[in-house]
Length: 358
Image (cartoon, rainbow, N blue to C red; front, top):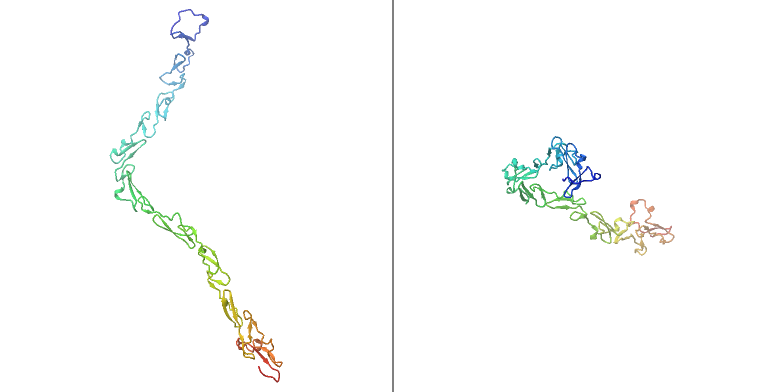
């Protein structure tokens, strides 16, 4: 700073100004307002001022040394504890790190945690790893384990060696540490519609109930597909069964049988029945024998089922006013057992006095 030796007019002087530099430029003295607090020393700079805070006792910080000093603001660690106004701080280190500023990585292998020599211990951040020799395992290689030399894998499983022991890669259909368990493929209930599931090795078999088919018994069988109904019968499909609706004249599970119309004995009065084929029959009614010529002249019964009694007296066969009686009329018989179809044919003439003959 230079002192001016020439006269300066009184009206131009300002007590807050000083002059410095080659050209004696006027600089304001900021420290004159005493901005620094708590015993700090103020130092003017070219364009501003700086406060030099006290370095003993309770300490302060900030532009004007007006804030209690926080040592953690300048600490290199993330988790820090300090007392305001004091210069000391304490770093709380995460697991695996140590040192005043948590900058040092801990070597967990220093304590020789592995059962074998130290070279088997591999240090890691926040931990360690024991590289076990063959036949040993566990976190510290302190457990005797089976290795692939002992062929532990069953049922054609493949053994894979690891430092901690071994691993079995099982063949399809098996599971377990040593592939000792057969996987029950029926647990998922793959068989449908009430089918029985039989477990195999990496497979299963479904035994379907009647009416279903397919690997999982998922398909219903159409029993009508093979046309089981004969003689024009109509097939109705069901589950495991079918039914045939037969045309008239046929019967049976598959309409295979022609109905015997004579089985119901449709012919009356001792008539003989003859089955004539599909839905047809004929009745042979009892014939009337004798007559004047001795030949069969008509039937004693007639009609489709021989249900009509032939009136032999209709033509008045008795001469000379003889009275005609039908032999088939029950009122002419004293006892029922005396009448039969054989002797019921024909008629009887009751002659007038003076006449005789049949």
